[in-house]
Image (cartoon, rainbow, N blue to C red; front, side):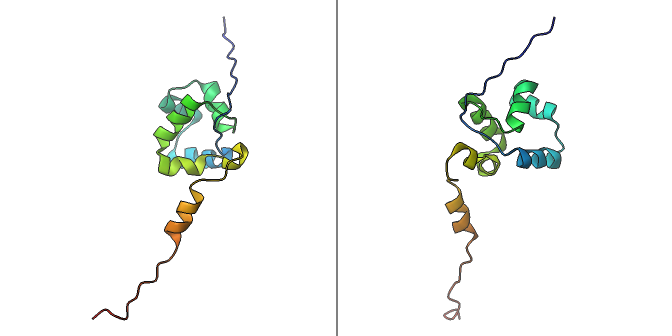
Length: 105
C-alpha cells in the first residue's frame, strides 16, 4: 500500500531553481543526497528545488546547511517581494579603496 504525500508549502522562503541546480551539480549532489542532508522527504526536496515557497523550519535548515553568507545568494528575494538585504553589503565590500600612498616614506 503506497502512501500519498500531500505537501502544501506554507510560503515563507523560496529559492532560485536555476542557481540551486548549479549548486547541486557543482557539489556533485543529487536530489536524494540534498534531501538526506536536510533530513527531509524527496517530495519536499523537489518542491524546494522547483522554487516553491517553504516554511520557517525548512528555511532554517536550508540556511544552516548552506551557511548564511552563501544561502542568501540562493534565496529568490524577488519572488518573495523583498529587496535583497545583502545587496548593499556586497556592493560596499566590492568597492575599490584608494589609499593615500603619497605620505609613505
